[in-house]
Length: 365
Image (cartoon, rainbow, N blue to C red):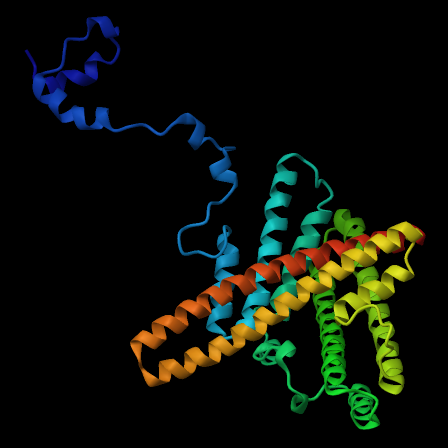
């Protein structure tokens, strides 16, 4: 009789019932393989939840690897703690939108690719805003947070500088009102910067489309470009309205009956008053803006505490007292997480409110 190994290939054609039992030695060798548990069918499928919804690994900030890579790159750029917290909120919202889009794509609900184009555009804006697109000029702009700019840093616009000087020397403002007005000037500066980022992003997108676009896709690109130009027009209108307001307030001072103090809320309220809201809807929107303003004030408080905690931590690390370093690190980490959480809620709420006003204004048109 031939050895087992030589006969095995010739037995493949036989019916299983005719196969002789394998020697005990082979059974012993195969036993460990037979005892290994097989993965459940419900977890390995191509369309399983685990395959399509990435799970966050321990120690990672985001579920999507792309967002984690951007986050690590931002940390290497050594942005300020407040700017990092703002970026964290933007990436969280971007990640949420991209995961929602993936579900829509599976269901065939983005056939024209419009939602995908918007996501790409939004991500490009985030990259430019925080200096993550590799452009040196962007990195210089974002190496310091605009929100943390001091009056000595200037406003970068002669018109704003002139208005600010006039307001400071007019004697019409208390120190608290001057702080409030300075925040409005900084907010206006941020709006202008964001407009320029959008404009540059759109210009680069148009150039790349011209180079690679096929005639069949031309209609879709024109639609996308038109949409972005409409967005730019809205932002430019908001900038002009904001500049008019700064001129008025700088000359006249604050009205004792002013509705709101936070610049972003003031912008929304001005836009809402010219939108197609009924009186009841406008009153409801006003109440929601009050809640939103309170949320922003809470977030601003945590941002300030985070900066103070960061400075304390740097000071303690210089001294080298391990016990103090540990305590300050723990406090800093808690403040950082709270600031990130509130930042996400503020940006999501702002996104929702802006969308409502935008829909009402476009319905009017």
